[in-house]
Length: 187
Ligand code: DGI
Ligand code: FE
Ligand code: FE
Ligand code: FE
Image (tube, rainbow, N blue to C red; front, side, top):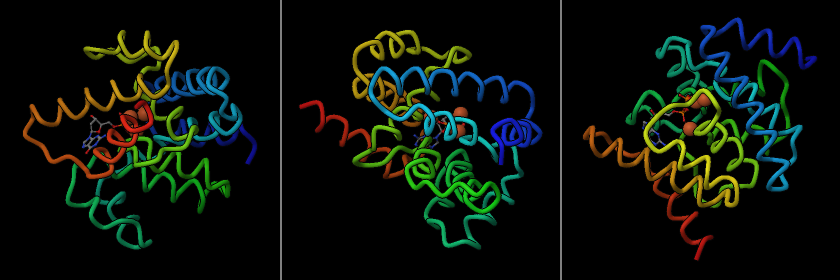
């Protein structure tokens, strides 16, 4: 599918504000890819698709997970985690994306994972810090991202984990693996 058609298709599945977020993630992911040596074309493609089914009904997202052998343990954790895995599945099945690096970056953009690839990190961090984001700590993350991809992403995960703790929510194990992996890399 041509890039413009892909963008139009994604845009049609979400409210305008989420599309503006997607444009912000695209721009930020390409800039981070250039800064830290990832492939900007792959970063752009993963960013376009990363939230493709965020606004699908949650029972549809759950159905994709159940019927296609995606990790069933996701269904025991926050619904916010589901769109990333369902989105990666759609990227392959509906949009014909075959590049495993791009599919992984979509799949792990919410939870992260242990041993994140450069592209995983770029897309996940872009999602945290795109210009439309406004949460406590985002300025700090943007500043750190000027010089360290790993330190900035670690600050992002720390913030998310604190948020989940404060809300008394479960934490998906891959998020803890992501944080531990980043700390190990930074040692
Ligand atoms: O889809 P976006 O809103 O752009 O962002 P995202 O896909 O990174 O989703 C972030 C949300 O997911 C955030 O509000 C926290 C929530 N969440 C719930 N459980 C977990 C989780 N995030 C992580 N990293 N790990 C969890 O276990
Ligand atoms: Fe997302
Ligand atoms: Fe995220
Ligand atoms: Fe997003």
